Length: 211
Image 1 (cartoon, rainbow, N blue to C red):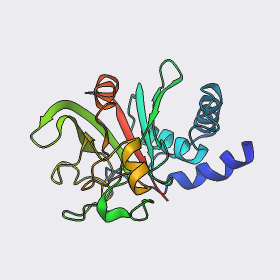
Image 2: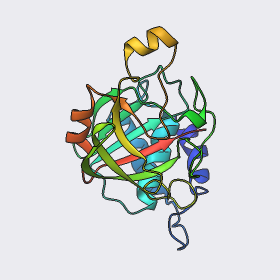
Image 3: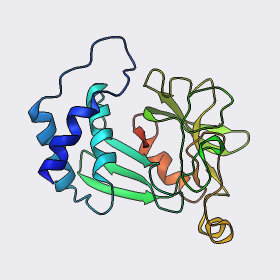
Protein backbone atom coordinates (compact mmCIF):
# COMPACT_ATOMS: atom_id res chain seq x y z
CA UNK A 1 0.00 0.00 0.00
CA UNK A 2 2.88 2.40 0.83
CA UNK A 3 4.18 2.19 -2.74
CA UNK A 4 0.74 3.05 -4.15
CA UNK A 5 0.52 6.20 -2.06
CA UNK A 6 4.07 7.21 -2.94
CA UNK A 7 3.31 6.98 -6.66
CA UNK A 8 -0.08 8.66 -6.45
CA UNK A 9 0.58 11.83 -4.48
CA UNK A 10 3.20 13.50 -6.71
CA UNK A 11 0.54 13.59 -9.46
CA UNK A 12 -2.28 15.05 -7.38
CA UNK A 13 -1.06 18.62 -7.54
CA UNK A 14 -1.57 18.67 -11.31
CA UNK A 15 -5.26 19.31 -10.58
CA UNK A 16 -6.39 22.81 -11.66
CA UNK A 17 -6.44 25.45 -8.95
CA UNK A 18 -9.48 27.56 -8.09
CA UNK A 19 -7.16 30.56 -7.53
CA UNK A 20 -4.24 32.01 -9.53
CA UNK A 21 -1.81 31.58 -6.62
CA UNK A 22 0.91 28.92 -7.07
CA UNK A 23 0.03 25.48 -5.77
CA UNK A 24 1.64 24.58 -2.43
CA UNK A 25 4.23 21.84 -2.27
CA UNK A 26 2.86 18.56 -0.95
CA UNK A 27 5.21 17.60 1.84
CA UNK A 28 5.95 14.15 3.19
CA UNK A 29 3.98 14.89 6.35
CA UNK A 30 0.78 15.44 4.37
CA UNK A 31 1.31 12.21 2.47
CA UNK A 32 1.79 10.27 5.68
CA UNK A 33 -1.23 11.94 7.30
CA UNK A 34 -3.48 10.97 4.40
CA UNK A 35 -2.29 7.38 4.37
CA UNK A 36 -2.61 7.09 8.14
CA UNK A 37 -6.13 8.53 8.09
CA UNK A 38 -7.24 6.16 5.33
CA UNK A 39 -6.00 3.24 7.40
CA UNK A 40 -7.34 4.55 10.72
CA UNK A 41 -10.85 5.01 9.35
CA UNK A 42 -10.54 1.52 7.80
CA UNK A 43 -11.71 2.66 4.38
CA UNK A 44 -10.04 -0.12 2.41
CA UNK A 45 -12.66 -2.12 0.56
CA UNK A 46 -15.26 0.58 1.10
CA UNK A 47 -13.80 3.76 -0.43
CA UNK A 48 -11.16 3.50 -3.14
CA UNK A 49 -7.69 4.61 -2.16
CA UNK A 50 -7.39 6.84 -5.22
CA UNK A 51 -10.67 8.69 -4.62
CA UNK A 52 -9.84 9.31 -0.96
CA UNK A 53 -6.30 10.45 -1.74
CA UNK A 54 -7.44 12.96 -4.34
CA UNK A 55 -10.23 14.26 -2.11
CA UNK A 56 -7.84 14.67 0.82
CA UNK A 57 -5.31 16.46 -1.37
CA UNK A 58 -7.95 18.80 -2.79
CA UNK A 59 -9.20 19.76 0.67
CA UNK A 60 -5.61 20.45 1.75
CA UNK A 61 -4.86 22.43 -1.40
CA UNK A 62 -7.82 24.71 -0.80
CA UNK A 63 -6.94 25.16 2.88
CA UNK A 64 -10.42 23.97 3.82
CA UNK A 65 -11.26 23.01 7.38
CA UNK A 66 -13.50 20.09 6.56
CA UNK A 67 -15.24 18.13 9.28
CA UNK A 68 -17.63 16.29 6.98
CA UNK A 69 -16.30 15.22 3.58
CA UNK A 70 -18.50 13.53 1.00
CA UNK A 71 -16.77 11.70 -1.86
CA UNK A 72 -18.73 10.85 -5.02
CA UNK A 73 -16.60 8.26 -6.79
CA UNK A 74 -17.79 8.56 -10.37
CA UNK A 75 -15.21 6.05 -11.56
CA UNK A 76 -17.68 3.39 -10.37
CA UNK A 77 -20.98 2.40 -12.06
CA UNK A 78 -24.14 4.12 -10.87
CA UNK A 79 -25.39 0.81 -9.47
CA UNK A 80 -22.66 1.00 -6.80
CA UNK A 81 -23.17 2.93 -3.57
CA UNK A 82 -20.46 5.36 -4.61
CA UNK A 83 -21.28 8.39 -2.45
CA UNK A 84 -19.46 8.19 0.88
CA UNK A 85 -19.74 10.64 3.79
CA UNK A 86 -16.72 10.66 6.09
CA UNK A 87 -16.61 12.35 9.49
CA UNK A 88 -12.99 13.52 9.52
CA UNK A 89 -13.24 14.79 13.09
CA UNK A 90 -14.46 11.52 14.57
CA UNK A 91 -12.64 9.47 11.95
CA UNK A 92 -15.47 7.30 10.74
CA UNK A 93 -17.38 6.47 7.59
CA UNK A 94 -20.89 7.72 8.33
CA UNK A 95 -22.79 6.51 5.30
CA UNK A 96 -22.52 5.15 1.76
CA UNK A 97 -25.34 5.53 -0.73
CA UNK A 98 -26.22 5.87 -4.41
CA UNK A 99 -25.61 9.04 -6.37
CA UNK A 100 -26.58 9.80 -9.97
CA UNK A 101 -24.45 11.47 -12.60
CA UNK A 102 -25.54 13.77 -15.40
CA UNK A 103 -27.21 12.78 -18.69
CA UNK A 104 -24.31 14.30 -20.58
CA UNK A 105 -21.79 12.11 -18.77
CA UNK A 106 -22.90 8.64 -19.84
CA UNK A 107 -25.39 5.93 -18.94
CA UNK A 108 -24.25 3.23 -16.48
CA UNK A 109 -20.78 4.73 -16.23
CA UNK A 110 -19.84 8.38 -15.90
CA UNK A 111 -17.47 8.61 -18.87
CA UNK A 112 -17.10 12.37 -19.38
CA UNK A 113 -17.28 15.59 -17.40
CA UNK A 114 -18.05 19.20 -18.23
CA UNK A 115 -18.25 22.60 -16.57
CA UNK A 116 -20.18 24.01 -19.53
CA UNK A 117 -23.66 25.49 -19.36
CA UNK A 118 -26.18 23.24 -21.09
CA UNK A 119 -23.94 20.17 -21.06
CA UNK A 120 -26.13 18.29 -18.55
CA UNK A 121 -22.86 16.71 -17.43
CA UNK A 122 -21.29 16.08 -14.05
CA UNK A 123 -18.41 18.35 -13.02
CA UNK A 124 -15.40 17.02 -11.15
CA UNK A 125 -13.60 18.69 -8.25
CA UNK A 126 -14.21 20.07 -4.78
CA UNK A 127 -17.42 21.81 -3.72
CA UNK A 128 -18.27 23.61 -0.53
CA UNK A 129 -21.75 22.58 0.53
CA UNK A 130 -23.96 25.57 1.20
CA UNK A 131 -27.26 26.06 2.93
CA UNK A 132 -30.38 23.97 2.64
CA UNK A 133 -32.83 25.30 0.08
CA UNK A 134 -36.22 24.27 -1.23
CA UNK A 135 -36.12 23.61 -4.96
CA UNK A 136 -39.46 24.15 -6.74
CA UNK A 137 -38.82 20.97 -8.72
CA UNK A 138 -36.94 18.73 -6.27
CA UNK A 139 -37.92 19.85 -2.78
CA UNK A 140 -35.30 19.97 -0.01
CA UNK A 141 -31.84 20.39 -1.52
CA UNK A 142 -28.33 21.67 -0.85
CA UNK A 143 -26.52 24.48 -2.63
CA UNK A 144 -23.09 23.59 -4.04
CA UNK A 145 -20.27 26.08 -4.55
CA UNK A 146 -17.66 24.82 -7.04
CA UNK A 147 -14.14 25.66 -5.88
CA UNK A 148 -12.06 24.51 -8.85
CA UNK A 149 -11.61 27.01 -11.65
CA UNK A 150 -12.29 25.40 -15.01
CA UNK A 151 -13.70 22.22 -13.48
CA UNK A 152 -16.81 23.15 -11.48
CA UNK A 153 -16.80 26.94 -11.10
CA UNK A 154 -20.06 27.22 -13.10
CA UNK A 155 -22.01 25.12 -10.58
CA UNK A 156 -24.15 28.00 -9.34
CA UNK A 157 -24.95 29.43 -12.77
CA UNK A 158 -25.82 25.89 -13.95
CA UNK A 159 -27.99 25.42 -10.83
CA UNK A 160 -26.07 22.28 -9.84
CA UNK A 161 -27.39 21.23 -6.43
CA UNK A 162 -27.62 18.07 -4.36
CA UNK A 163 -31.23 16.92 -4.38
CA UNK A 164 -33.41 13.85 -3.99
CA UNK A 165 -34.83 12.05 -7.02
CA UNK A 166 -37.19 9.13 -7.62
CA UNK A 167 -34.77 7.70 -10.19
CA UNK A 168 -32.15 7.06 -7.49
CA UNK A 169 -33.45 3.84 -5.96
CA UNK A 170 -33.11 0.07 -5.88
CA UNK A 171 -36.36 -0.22 -7.85
CA UNK A 172 -35.03 1.94 -10.68
CA UNK A 173 -31.83 -0.13 -10.84
CA UNK A 174 -33.86 -3.36 -10.94
CA UNK A 175 -35.93 -2.05 -13.87
CA UNK A 176 -33.22 -0.33 -15.90
CA UNK A 177 -29.88 -1.79 -14.86
CA UNK A 178 -28.62 1.63 -13.77
CA UNK A 179 -29.74 4.73 -11.91
CA UNK A 180 -31.55 7.50 -13.71
CA UNK A 181 -29.55 10.58 -14.62
CA UNK A 182 -29.74 14.23 -13.67
CA UNK A 183 -28.91 17.40 -15.57
CA UNK A 184 -25.51 17.48 -13.87
CA UNK A 185 -26.57 17.42 -10.22
CA UNK A 186 -25.30 14.76 -7.80
CA UNK A 187 -28.83 13.45 -7.19
CA UNK A 188 -29.49 11.03 -4.32
CA UNK A 189 -32.46 9.02 -3.09
CA UNK A 190 -35.31 10.97 -1.55
CA UNK A 191 -35.09 8.76 1.54
CA UNK A 192 -31.43 9.68 2.13
CA UNK A 193 -31.72 13.42 1.42
CA UNK A 194 -32.73 14.48 4.97
CA UNK A 195 -29.72 12.68 6.45
CA UNK A 196 -27.37 14.25 3.91
CA UNK A 197 -28.75 17.69 4.75
CA UNK A 198 -28.13 16.99 8.42
CA UNK A 199 -24.54 15.90 7.77
CA UNK A 200 -23.40 18.35 5.09
CA UNK A 201 -25.47 21.55 5.15
CA UNK A 202 -23.58 24.82 5.44
CA UNK A 203 -20.05 23.63 6.06
CA UNK A 204 -19.50 20.18 4.57
CA UNK A 205 -17.49 19.48 1.44
CA UNK A 206 -18.17 17.30 -1.58
CA UNK A 207 -15.43 15.93 -3.79
CA UNK A 208 -16.49 14.49 -7.15
CA UNK A 209 -13.89 12.02 -8.34
CA UNK A 210 -13.64 10.70 -11.86
CA UNK A 211 -11.19 9.10 -14.25
